[in-house]
Amino acid sequence: IYKWHHSGLNRWHGRGSTADFQKIIQERCDDYTQQIRPRARSGNCQGIQQAFTSAFISKDPCKATKEDYKPLLDLAYPTVPCDKAVFWSKTKELAHEYAKRRGLLTLEDTLLGSLADGLSWCGEPGSPDLNYQSCPDWKKDCRTNYFSVFWEALSERFAENVCGTVQVVLNGSIENAFDKMSIFGRVEAPNLSPTVTLKAWLVHDPGKPPSDSCSGPSIKELESILNQRSVRFICRDNLSRDQFLGSF
Ligand code: APR
Image (cartoon, rainbow, N blue to C red; front, side, top):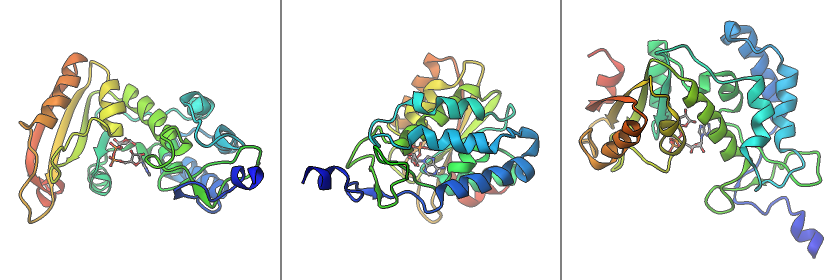
C-alpha cells in the first residue's frame, strides 16, 4: 500500500508533463538561437536542455526552490534592450499581439521564456523520467512546484534587468486590474529598478464598459509599490482592444 500510494503517478491535480518535453526544448532552443534572435545567442542548447531537466528530474515535485533553477538561469539570463520590455497580467494574448506589432519584447520572447512557453513539466523522486500523468497544481497541491517556481524565478530576473520605459498590459475588464498576488504584482513590480519608468495600459473587452481605471484602488496599490522604489509611473485607461492595438 505504501509503495502504491507514494509512487502513484496520477496523484496530482494539474496537467502532466508535455509529451516530448526534452525534444521540444531542444528544437525550440535550436530555432531560437539560429533564427529568432540569433544576436541574443546563448549558443549552448545542449547545456541549456540539460540544466533545465536536471533542475527538477528525480526531485520531489513540491519542493522546488529558486536555487534549483540558478544553473539554468545563469546559462541564459533573460535580458531585453532598454525601452522594449512588456509585462502582462491576465492579458497574455493581447500583450503578445501588442509586442509583436510594436517590435517590443515580452518574457516569452527571451530564450528561456520561449522554451517553456505553454509547456508543463515535473519529475518524480527516484525516477529519471518526467511524470506525464499529472503534476502538482498551484492551488490544490503545492505552490512550490517546479512550473510555478520557474516562472517566478525567471520573471524576477527579467524584471530586475529591464531598463528605460517599460510597459505593462493590464485587464481593464476585471475588478482589480492590478492583482498583487499575480506574478506581475508579487514578483515583477517589486523588482523593477529605480531608474525605470513603468507605463500601464488598462485595456477592456470590446463592447463592455471598463471595470477598473487608473484612479481605482488596485492601480493606487501598484503606484504605492512603485513609489517605494522610486519607479516613475504613467497610466492610461479606458482603452478598447482596437484603440490599444491601433494607433491613437
Ligand atoms: N506560459 C504558461 N504559463 C505561464 C507563462 C507562460 N509563458 N507565464 C506565466 N505563466 C503562469 C504563471 O504561473 C502565472 O501566474 O501563468 C500564470 C499567468 O497568470 P496571470 O495572472 O495572467 O499573470 P501573472 O501571474 O501576472 O504572470 C504574467 O509574469 O511571466 C511573467 O513577464 C510575465 O509579466 C508577465 C507575468
